Image 1 (cartoon, one colour):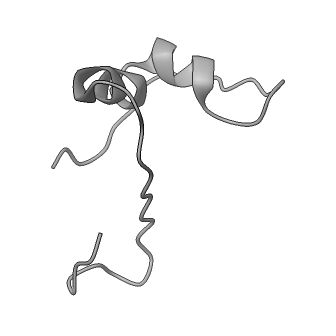
Image 2: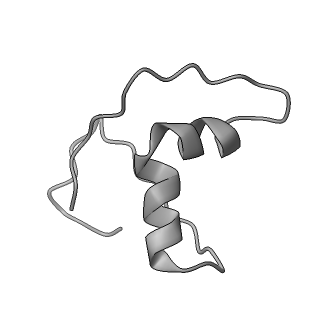
Length: 55
């Protein structure tokens, strides 16, 4: 992401995935999918809800 408007406290994540766009979106936006893959191996990610900007 190259955006002159990005604030100093923003987190920008860039990565290329060999997967369908819809699946990637589900992995980031559906809590059960997110808990299954996010974090290091062996970590547990308790998620009650996800909220964030959708662009």
